[in-house]
Image (cartoon, rainbow, N blue to C red):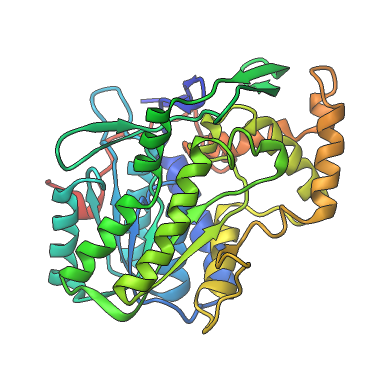
Length: 393
């Protein structure tokens, strides 16, 4: 069938298998062109099918020549409904890894569940023995707890409502957007879903099963951002969850004999960031500024720099709170001064002049396999792609 993008709010409900494959191929080619990395050799990536998680898995495989075990929550094609992007990305990744003679296996399911944790531990025992790096890159709207209770995350402020400029991605019009404040229950739910509780559960399960190397490392991804977005992010519900994530990193390092890091990454168009009000406008302006300065990085460039220059140093450079700051170029004072100045000026009449809206949309469509010049989107494509390690399951 011919697959076209169908966008609804901040998500695309279709994905293109050939385009997703092209995305993975380009990322792998970038990593191989940069050179090998002396790093981990047996890597578990939790949430490794899109965004930073996918790029981390690609970097581990093609930069470190590591065996990678991934966990995703994907679905194959059903009738005329395409698979999701994570499924196609994972299929393309595994095919590339196999060609390179690299171990690649994927567990498909709810990473929060005890069942998936058991499946992962069994796979490590069967195939790898022990692992030396755990990447935690989960982003989800809800989580089922062990007792069956389902808790949800939300993107709200704390203490008072917040009104700021917002870009309507459907019309490219800028108008005021008010974000309401969260209840105590919503704050607690967001921390349980997006905080460090599940990360610690994973590390505890892996440690108790005896599948962690003595010198193992683990890293979870976070974001801080500029003061402009503090009310909706850093000081909002998601920010409280990220603070809990940082607290958990210290607990993991202290209790489990592994070294845990928080990597504060640069703002990019991801499925998670697209859902946050106000952030798309900030991203569009940030892209404009950083591309002009030559400091813009995408997911794979960020992850390669993290692996090659930070994560595997004997003493990785961190800030005063022990965080690896991959957002250092974004938070450069000159960058933020220009972003703030443009933010004050931007409106619906000059949005294309002052912000990189096209760059935002290019990254958005790339997430779902669309917009790659090398792919002929007018041709029929087989949407029934198999993930090699899941074939027949």
